[in-house]
Image (cartoon, rainbow, N blue to C red; front, side):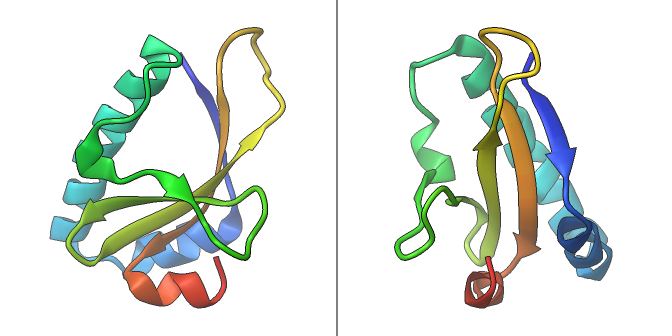
Length: 98
């Protein structure tokens, strides 16, 4: 099971999401975690996980038509399990400061 850390910027963004947006993110998060747990098989195409251009080490994923989240990989806490650092969550506007 992957481990995680959540930055304060993510929680500030989270508080601005509607309950429907929070639910949609949680659903996508379940898929994301399942994909990580499978290890090395890639992500479901629906999530459109990719590296962010111009921001080394930062990745983005889509959880709704205008729902985005940014994260980075941290050092593994448990060998062989990904450690995810959640940076931001919201709309495309988070890309200004991912």
